[in-house]
Image 1 (spheres, rainbow, N blue to C red):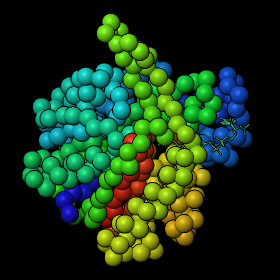
Image 2 (image 1 turned 135 degrees about the vertical axis):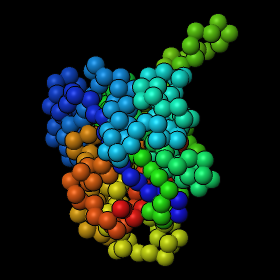
Image 3 (image 1 turned 90 degrees about the vertical axis):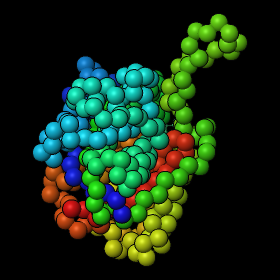
Length: 318
Ligand code: COA
């Protein structure tokens, strides 16, 4: 198929918030959060903007690839809200980097990285772009209700960037949507239009936790079996299952269905919480930095998110 990953970078806020820090102002405990989610801490923006984080991630990825910003042919941002609704986050990053190529955002919530890879593959295959910079970035801390213990303990802020080029590494990719606006949502307000009868103020992220949990476990297993039958492979042939980092118990439940060993399911949710579409590229970056990834390793990437969106791909590393 059309592409390979050549570099990655990250932008993480300076301020780390532990479970005990949260327990100081809401009715929760380190014990509850750890055992129900696997999360021990998360990073939260204080002084950084989302553009700061995303630009840091993009710059690191470009430098690690030995490239200049002028070598990038397309910037795809994955976020559900940048520092502005317009211009898009990717335009703000492009301005900081000094690129002159097209830049736009897509919003597929936590599945955004897989959707962005699919879009990038299309541009590369049609030879409309050679090097695509995908920047995933999310400031969850501005979308959650800090008085709601059932959601605010789950999320964190951050950014991760990936550069892809033409190559043969992407063996399979699939994206899907099972439309549902109730299970997981973040309402936008109606502003101050004098013509609206029932105005709404901007809301906070709301979710039906147990329904999302079931959706995630089911879709993770379905995505894997679709990929395996498309490629004529078995899960035994996958070296790492790089899954969306939303809840350790979701990952453990998928692992139980797949019947593969724990060491094939890397996690970093304990340190970052759920950073939406940033989770998978950030985990890939950490595996790459720690030399866990060897050339030829077969990776199954899979995510789910609001929409309800889902997506997966199989990549051969190197
Ligand atoms: N601290 C302490 N207690 C908490 C709590 C917290 N942070 N959050 C909820 N509780 C309480 C509830 O009030 C409830 O109390 P009750 O039994 O007295 O009514 C109890 O814990 C159990 O709540 P429940 O919602 O049944 O817990 P759960 O085991 O389903 O875990 C989630 C809740 C949110 C962690 C879990 O459902 C989940 O991870 N869902 C998927 C969410 C997700 O992935 N979202 C992102 C998608 S990209």
